[in-house]
Length: 117
Length: 310
Image 1: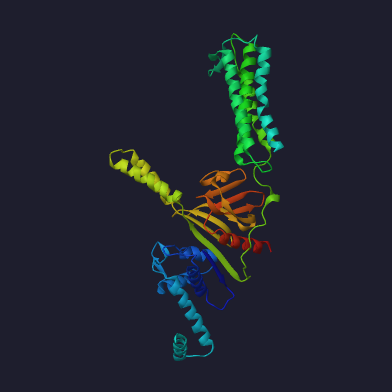
Image 2: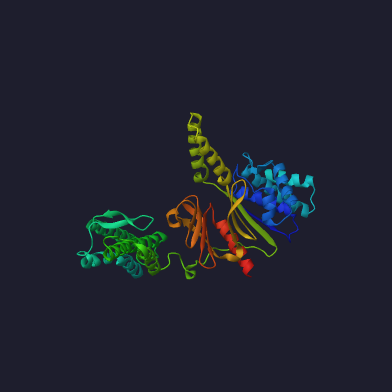
């Protein structure tokens, strides 16, 4: 898959790398069982710190999108759900925009309820 | 097209030497004639002279017919493939060396029918062998020249502060299936008492470890094709060497078959028929690799090459 990061952007590099994997999953460019480059390899390819990649992979593991196995690298989980991931991404956008408008959690939930009915 | 027929004629030219010289020499040639010499240079094997000449003529005719068929099959107006070039060279070398062999043995026999020695006349044979280069040169190059480099693919829109890289594993039944199947059969035979088969099992295991997985990567340095768990680099192409990038349907026949192929003017890793990435290098060489969705690495490589050039 293709990875691209912008070193001048305010978004941390690890977040950008994680976003690339999520995006590829949503677009169907990555499928369950597929192997991501080893953290060391990707750090070398993008010329970024190894820990940056490890942080990105760690986040993806916490989101239950990939499995990290010693010596086997990062593998897309069999139950990685592209459809649900798309919703999560939309929710992230929503939350980011709500934060920018200074809304709190209760107000966000209220808006969600409003949209539901 | 005309060049190829001229090359075919050149490949066949030495063939006429045998019948013509036969006309002049037939009466004086000994029968049988010496056709093999031992280490000391004395003749140790003889052949019936007419049969020897006829055999050589038959060989030249077969070579010329092969060349004609090969050239006739090349579409008009299209550049001939690598195989045609090789066939023309081989036909030239075969007719040349057959004629050279004839001239060498005949002149040696005429010089001294009683104690025929080849000596320096071996040069006739070697010269005839070298004749293969003449039709090959006359046919012209088989690979595209720099003028034929394609316009390339749309480069990825890459900002100046952006870093991009591509990495993928190449999968192919050829890569793992065949050795694994062979290994399984060998293992079965080894278990049923065919002890030497253990060696084959070991060889297959080593091959699988070394080449069972291929990684293709593209980054700021260029393209890398790395084999196996040990990471043996098979091909490294620096960005500065790439003139153009192309996405193409890879036909294994056009690239010399399956696997890692090296031909004059090109090399390729062909794992299947289908889409692939083709790099046109400065100086006219090409490198191809079969990969799913080659547009992605192609667009990235184009962008990176542009960036280096800017």
